[in-house]
Image (cartoon, rainbow, N blue to C red; front, side):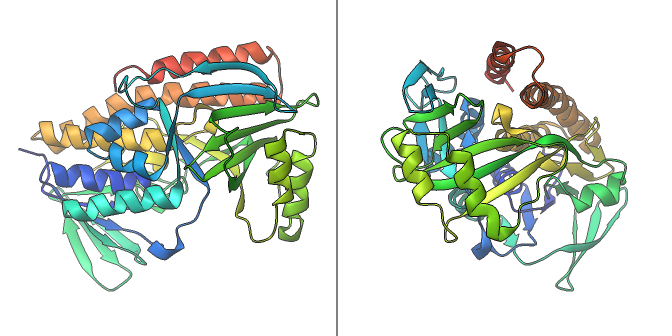
Amino acid sequence: MAAVKKVIVVGGGIGGLTVAHALQRIGVSARVIEMGDKRDRIGTGITLLGNALRALAELGLVEACLEGGHGWDVVSVRDAAGATVSEQSSPRIWDPDRPAAMGIMRPRLGQVLEDFATKSGARIDFNTTIIRIDQDNEGVTVQLSNGETDRADLLIAADGVYSKTRQKIFGEEFKTHYAGQGVWRYTVPRTEAINGFVIYRAPTGRMVGALPLSKELCYLFSLESTDEKLRIRQNQVCDYLRNLLAPFTAPELVEAAKMIGEDKHISYRPFDVLMMPAPWHRGRVVLLGDAAHSLTPQMTSGGGMAIEDALVLSQELDRNDDLETALADYSHRREQRVKRVYDTGYAICQEERKPVHGREYAMGLLREGYAFLASPV
């Protein structure tokens, strides 16, 4: 018998919706409390590697995700003009007959996960926040912004890197720090040239990456290293992005630069990182996803780690009668794996910021990290 019967999930992002679906599959009632409006989902794209697809497959979600996105196998390195310098195929670690990885628009992924969670029986409350949390030996009581009070056996904090739940329960000493990098993301129409994960390198050292999201769309990204968080006025963003793309003459990047405009979704995110030490629970409140670990994106695994968290937490709650044992086992399984990914991505980030060992060192770390991700969860 599962360790809990009813769970409240704070946060309706990737991790929160995935764990709600996962819990409903094992007979645990899940209610998701999401502060945002479902109509306000924004974002460019997200990449899910083979380990994330493997976890989605175990939860019965992978086919719908692949249908909504675009699978790929090829990793290419090209020069500024678009000529291929090297190319290789990524291993298909979850199914030899299916793509090694995939890209998907974040709003599309959110809709897929929401649809499955609600079909599984989860309740999702949008435009709602938790204003008070009280826990005792038998459960957790929450007061909601809509005036309602609810009670559950467990509260899962999946409310992101700046988690207010983590702050309330674990204290303000557990906070993010800036890793010295950020990333620009820009969604554009996809051409046949973007056939997988493509990295363009200019003689200046500037790098632009591209990843497919669907048959029609892809996104471009560019890392920016700064000692302080970059602050660009909104009316200067388009010119700034054009300048980032200026060293590149590959036709697909030239066309992308021409399309930059105020009507396009361009995002910049500084890398505010965090790695919570185990245990990831206090009493009947447990952390999941970015609330427990915010990673630099070099390992392309932020969303993937949240999906794995959801799978493992549901497994431990299902196989253990005792809640404390289930939560301790979840933390033990996840902290060691996520910390390896966190440390690898952070090391690559710091090498990119201030090179010491050379490009092959960073590529070696990346290969080791991908091999580790292929190992069982």
